Length: 386
Image 1 (cartoon, rainbow, N blue to C red):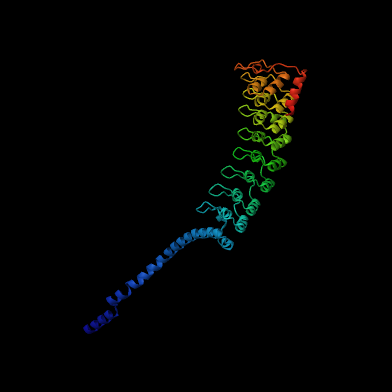
Image 2: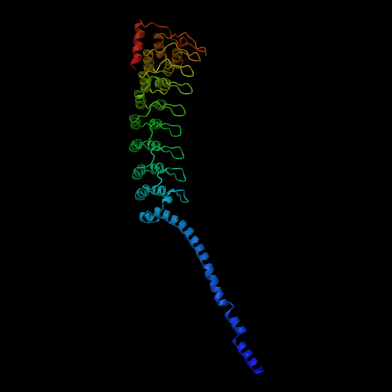
């Protein structure tokens, strides 16, 4: 009985797993644990790599895109470009389109123009059109002009039409007008007409008028185109402006802010033809400037005999005194134009009237005379025929 119990106990013990077995089978092996942890962490690292790679690739792609534009590689640009890229500027402040324009690359400009933001300014504030005009590439200008706003100014306030006029490019100016440019729109306070007049460009003036420009429109400083023409002696343009004006008599009698009349300016500068044109279009020979001089006062002082006779014929007052009391006859005599002074006396000027300096024409030997005196008549005729 006791032997049987011992055998049973031994048999049961033999059936139980040994401690070492459990240590070998139940405890995780270090070689197994490490790979498992690595597998768990791999997706996170891989995602981070993807993110880093994706961020780098975008920057790299844009860099490569601008490099391709710079190189004129339209095939590579087509492969790289994304719709949002048309809004981007490179480090130099250029969009892909303005970079192509800067490079004078017409094929690249043509490729980009179709989908580009056609009026997007570069970092310098130039629109693609104003930039193209400044660069002077006619082919590129025409490409851009297909969709660009023809009147859009750059950040400097320059309108494309004004830039074309500055270059004297009338074909471009007409093309801009045909595409909607306003012929009366000012650039930094100046009208296109004033720009054309300042350049003494008769053809530009004619083109602008033909396209509806106002020949009398003033700049922001108040100057009208006719004043610019008169002060510079541009008689042909002065005639055109008056001929095409809706108010020629008003323009002919325009005054500066200082009160100078156009007729006085023309006579003072000895622009005889302009003075005649102004008179033909209604300039008043008795209109006073800020010194109360009329055109006859100035012409007499300068000894302009033919102009004096013309002004007298137009109704100029031979006895008008300026703010200093000076009359035409006194001015002529004081400046040594004695024959002219005598002619003025013959036309009714009073040689005895003194100015505020105390001088009179009579002091220089000028006397009242009658036009019935044959000798005086001959002197007048001789003076007017010189």
